[in-house]
Image 1: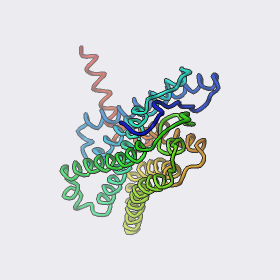
Image 2: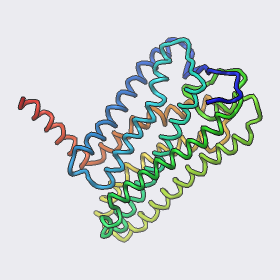
Image 3: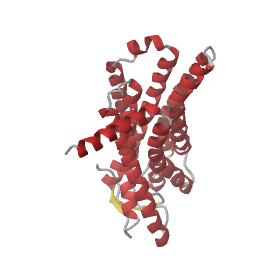
Image 4: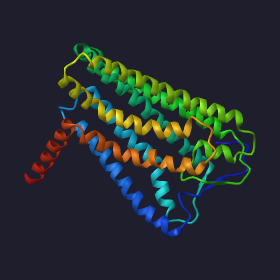
Length: 310
């Protein structure tokens, strides 16, 4: 990717420059990343392998877990490796590729979460029409639409940033390459680009969040007409999703829909949504879901039984 930059590589300052802290962070974040990959991969395998988890909700959950693996893998391995090396550099092309990957997978996850809210709305408010409305074909189209939407958003963010000239300095006070840190390094006026970047992120984030809120407002109004048992059953299916929505949209809203002035704050918040949330999502969806836990036990029993039969 060519532009007018004289800077051909960037240097990350990371989470800390203290050697002792970096060693502790290496062990801690390596553990977090392993839990993230293992937990989300377990959900993907369980949903694919289990015949009882064939509803649209678990179809979307499988893609959500896959996206958690993808976007944590864009940032975590590089960050973990940098804890052990002194020269934390990456090429300009590598930097832009990482920026594209983060925005692509995170934005796609936002769309998937929004689609999951629509699925819950149909399941609770129009239960008799659920199987007719939420067909496999429609679910597939909504997933494809989510991927396309994430791609378009990421392309816009990447093109706006990659065309900026970078003449030096080339040190970024962050642990991965994102829009706001790069805007601060550009050797030109970035006011217009900054507004476009914030508008792009803000439009998607606020639109998805508005749809999510309206979905659950309609769900809660509908539940008022149901008996207490109906309340508990419906809320149990929505509780995990609401928790994940709050955890995902909170940090991203803080970082991306406002002009950034403090990269240290952004860096701390970014750790939460790139490392912590992907690790927590499998726990949130399995601990509160009897069907997923039951399917996991059956999968484990089949594995143990096949090994004993050898």
